[in-house]
Image: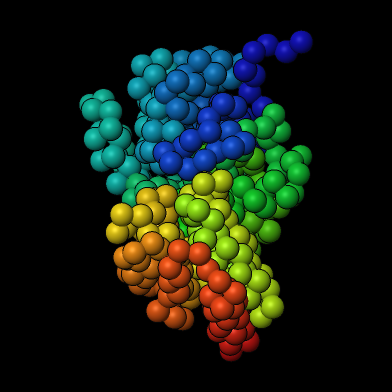
Length: 402
Ligand code: FEO
């Protein structure tokens, strides 16, 4: 039987020394149904180098994995690619226990580390496309501002062609496997899309620029080692192509229909809208919001061309569950959507107007003023819902084929 928390060799001189968070189910509002990992990497160069750390509560796991390879006191260099606390939670422990001679971060990273930890230690700012020597190996740094924070950067180990990409190309997935080709491809597809949708989607234009820049550099990649989830070994071209597609968000026939319901009327409308979408050749994904987490709704929206929202009116307002999901989605800003609102009401019926307003703030192009039905929809009202679905399908087809 092995010792607890051993490092895993991922390349000739690089070890994974991160932590597996099997139990986490909520990552600042994002549902992590499969847990997560916080990845840190140890480079056994002449100057022993640690890249990133883990969440503070996983300090023992990090230190144990490092110690399985080398005495932590022998760490000479620490590199912080990203200052968010899932990757810097053990920064103070590393400073205290390893006492590295050199600590590096991006210019914004130096500031963010001080503002988080007030450690008062000198951190050297590395400029974009700069390079440091680790003795027999070299690290190159590339700023990746806003992917995911202003301080974010990539580090590239030239001699072993390993890219330490912090949040980019990551996913929340706890696993005993360290490489992409050891994990079910469908799980990788879903969790990497979910991560992109919930973390990186607002910065899609920057993703496009970064991928163009990276392609222009022509640096070979044997491994892409993110700070969450598996290390990419076999699927590097696939995940890079997926990022390029998600960043561009080309129109598709997929349509997300999300709704809440009080006495079943708005649900009847949602199902009739979905029927109209099907008849028109669109591909609806129907999400009853009380059984659909906001971060899963966002994942479905990532590859959708349209968003239809059904809300009953409750005390002159839209339903609070939908306000939650739409507020979250608005902040992530999925571009190029068309959409519409619908919902049943008793006596005032303001919900559709509120939903329209939020959709317009999200820059969703509305195909209708919205459908409102008093109390329970009759067959005529349900036919109007089917017609709304058909109209959305028709508009989507024009976009997809145009
Ligand atoms: Fe995994 Fe932006 O931190």
